[in-house]
Length: 123
View 1 (cartoon, rainbow, N blue to C red):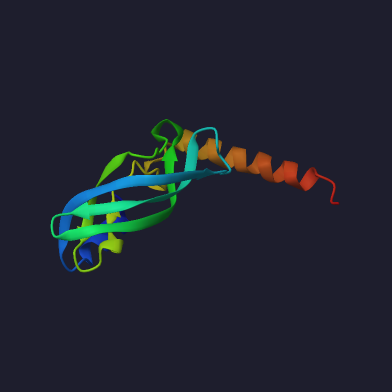
View 2 (view 1 turned 90 degrees about the horizontal axis):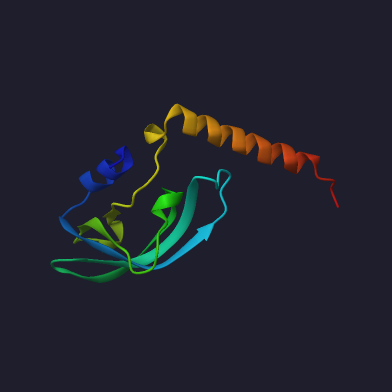
């Protein structure tokens, strides 16, 4: 769990453990697509004492091997006072978790992409 998740969870008025079920997961292009994917994820959080509540998370950045699919269920901490404030335990890629070689590859990939975009003739 990242720092932001801990902060969000700490601000919940009435947290309860529940689940998030993926209803749709739309992948979109990222600068370093060879190993990291970004998704817009819609789903439903459920927890004891909480009505099923639709929730969207965007972006959700995961390693390619952790591709998010419809029907997947992830653990979540849900605020009974405001279920849309759920903290969902996606297998998120965070900067602090990147190895230096991953970070270097990401920077190199972004630099190549930016260079090729500058070389394209404008229409």
